Image (tube, rainbow, N blue to C red; front, side, top):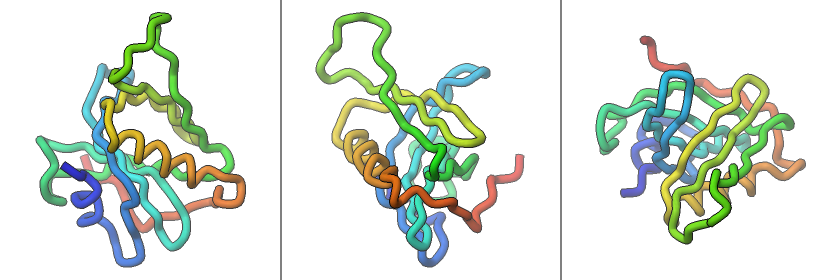
Length: 141
């Protein structure tokens, strides 16, 4: 299922979900599923991380947790697997870093992941790295 439709339902006018993928966020508290959306807002880009209760079908199924601004200090890089043998069709682990965060995310093998990563890379060219703002606020705990 294309998760960008669900994210698009949560956005304001003038904002577009370019690509989305569901991944596993590895953190201090263990591993947790997250929905990641690359969002364009008035010519600026950000990655929005959403928590979800189940398979996200509607906007009510997701809750905005955090926004990672794509700007000068933003980077996304594939993390090599721990073993020397690369298995075709295996999941992809990436590290996303920005001014106020460093996240390790495991993304599933497939076209949605490749599309998401390609679109994020397209946004990271020096000419497009802008200081982004957003009208969105994370959900209240």
